[in-house]
Image (cartoon, rainbow, N blue to C red):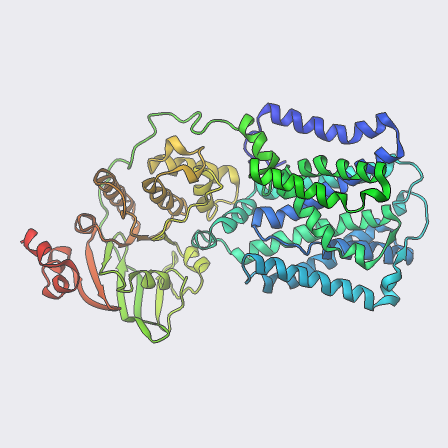
Length: 591
């Protein structure tokens, strides 16, 4: 298991170990064929749900077509077994095919959001079911396929009941280990960040499409491998059962009930629900037809009403350490001690002739400026002047109709980045006008997403995040969930996340809006300390106290045009600026 995962409370670790041990020990002690079957089914569905959770939970892409990969694995194993090839090899062939199919399907579907993504996956599931019916020479069509009755480990077919349970349990352990490794490595943090706030993740240098494709490829491969074993265990497959919407919903349901987005939630969901439904079927026979749907519905309703975070949410209430534990009260400074300001250096960014239209609205009109190393450039103007549009173009979130943005790389060469990841790679970091924290993560984990840009090792990223968080005045809240911060805390958190990336250019979008005067003063000191560390800053700001205190130069936008630029003291006396933005009262107050 990855060493970088947070220390798991001892009680939770013991409970998990006992639960896993019980999956093997109980059927062995009872030595009953039906009990063996129930526990094999628990392991299979827990593994399938855990694999689904990598996409549906960590990434937030609620796929209801995961039966595609299960069916691919099942058919690959059975078809190859009929050709004399062991299913131990067939499962890897099925996994390979599933990876190709997963990427091919998901890449276009990732453009869809919410229920539309789920509907698209259901549509593809139906396509594969129809294809399995059509190619009857290969799949047996509606008649289905029987597995070759060859007994032995090589063929995954046994007369004894313990070997299938051992294989199913082994597959469950493998999927849990993969899920654990994914969640607590850089990939897992990136996936959760993408799920929470895709634009903020992109600003932190995350290639959101790439990490989602990696997740769906892993999930599809694991699902297919479990599908191969389950097909051999069932001894018969047919399209309606292998490419089943009901199966896809079931494996998603276990994760939802157990705790979506958690590593062990799907296991808890399967342990709770599978025995109930299987025992009902065994005891009631035909009378229980469809009873599993009723059971799932009732349990899901109760979980949504009383445990919205699933069974793992209930467990976490008793074992999660209290926020802020172990943080020293002394580590709360709002800004580091002031250092001597280095001289302003050479140009680091050039913006030339930016034009942007939204329909008939000309949002930016020939906007151009330069930024120098160690300089703070203030960008002011009335609401609707085009300031945030300019920010989006100089950070890669919006493509200009014409004009260029050039950034000087660390090697001295000038480049024209395109995507947010390209800008981040050149050391351009940004915050957002509407704060975008990763609410499901702790404060420390939020900052780690930025630190991962330069530190792939989670332990190193955690150290950088903790040091940066303390420097930004967030020390007491590092272990708390980000959703509990105040608006001022959110803004400091965004700055901390960007600073953990070690940027060369920092774009600040109204970081002082909505905070009190004391926090404004602290924020000004913090920005000055960041500038003195050699970082160049472009700041959109309406708080004129901050603009006057921070800016070396000020650019004034109005109706998409630059109407003035220069030293703050000169710009605020410009009649055009006073008329368009500041007002006569401001001019009189500063006369």
